[in-house]
Image (cartoon, rainbow, N blue to C red):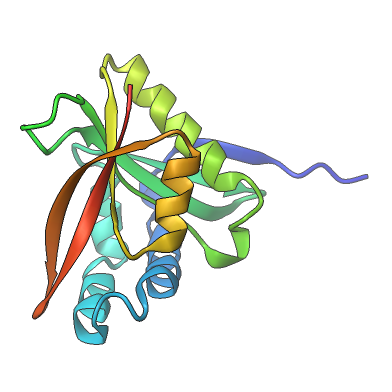
Length: 168
């Protein structure tokens, strides 16, 4: 019998290429048909390996879920950017490669990100998702989030509603 190692850990500069590819495939799968083609591709292309290498050293914390040496997903987190809301922590992004979705790795990564924010002294947490992103919306609701805030996000000439989910 083989043992498969699954680990959530802080990203390192050497993970930049794998995170960049994970970002590309997960965003194209999650947002095709929601975000207009040109702005979506521009956002994906902007976050190349160099961008992610810098992100591993930046002010936000970057976690990866590592499955037997493969970066299957990532999360970025830090202080809440919406100053009008009382939650102190925020998960800015959480994405998995499509082939790793639906097997519990998102919940594992999400749980570790929440624990890390709490260990850093953050009281409460918020996550934003596009309202029309049914998969993300269901994930955050089923993870115990309460949708308490709304905002708008611009993608080229298109405005999309986003929903803020909070946890204590």
